Length: 436
Image (cartoon, rainbow, N blue to C red; front, top):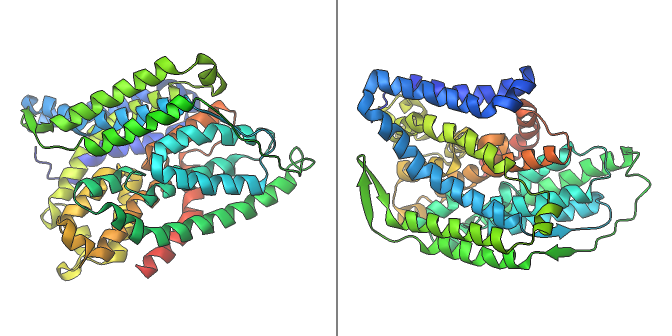
């Protein structure tokens, strides 16, 4: 299909603005009918397809984004969520500033090796339980999203989808670690220090937390069988990358993707079977967070298709002026790649954004790792880091929001969270872009 006008982005923008405004203006309506809002804008988009491209294009308009992108995405997210939900981690005692800071620091390290989704589902509940006595908790969820649900994923290609796509495209596994580690370490350190200062101030202001200054930490872990299941998950994701495909409605689908999805679903079922019910009860495990993500992202994946297609048209498309700004005279500017790819990742899925910039800047992994290493570094960092700018920038953000709400923690609205993120992260990102 050919999308030649940016007007095709209206349904996608409709979902974004609905997520931003309806929870503020009509909270009861949003809580009851959020999934129908996403469905409504998807139907509007398909109506556009029917009117301008013909009835024969409706099925491909659904099949392409759902089978190619959405199903693999939601299966991986769900598998990590289900397996992590079968692991009970507890820290009896009180979550004071030092404990919380160390928790976020080491949690961000874990996110780089089991993925931001796995780390989020595994660690958000014990983090909230350790701070159940606190009055002021909003900042806890915000910094958790920054560090564990997003930035920590830059440690390895296993941490976040953009880097994994780069790895599949030929970027050396250890190139990412070598190139991104200095920025990752410095950013994590700055955010942890900032969090410690904020948490210390709020801890002293907290009438509940103040009398309990002594911090006791006693680690308790149950559900070790689910920890072992992370090994076949990682092997499945890494090894299911072989050639061979078939066509359906003019689109190619790989056999390796089907095998990977089948194995991940099997691992999910094994986890549900072998995990004692008491562990999931202790975790207050529910499918609600994944259900919310599945419903919202189904609409997002369908309606974002025209934007991705237009971006793929390069300088000849409607976004040509933007792309010319990124690469004046044909030479890409690292700092501009950083901001454009990052801001796109905050509202689009970060994996396709990385893929678009991979092909726009060269498409050759050897060139990107050598002559254009600064460009690859720029959009690798941004697509991972700037997923923290909005709730929809990365799926784990919505998991944190949903589970925190279930624990009666007051979380920011969509726009409220964007305010937190821009106030704290944009100055840090500005410093990063200056040194690229």
